[in-house]
Image (cartoon, rainbow, N blue to C red; front, side):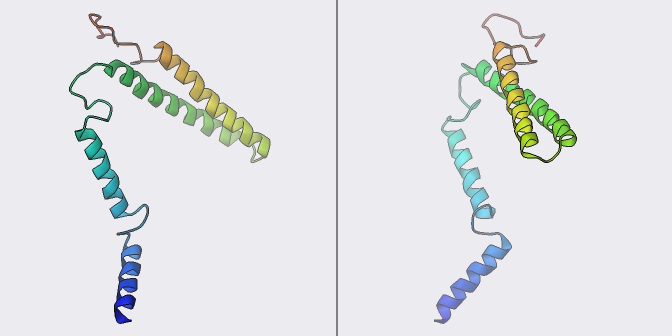
Length: 127
């Protein structure tokens, strides 16, 4: 009976210390190990031995950076100006999602900085 109480007590101490459980140190170590393994196997973007397809990944990365920065800035402005009502919440969602959509289209077309397609033989110094 004492062993069961000792184990239960140890689990409580570990949980309070943040050693085990979801969102704790052990969970973070598992996540890090998973990403290291995926990188070692070449399954993550930009870790492959070839640069083939890197232009597309670059467009996704910079497009998402531009989209999130602008969408969050607009959402902050709308959040500060509109009241806390259901209609205002719908408007905030529409502004945020619409901004993400428009920025994704702009990135897809190469209209944003560093989102132009990389074409073999073409200089990208101005990009």
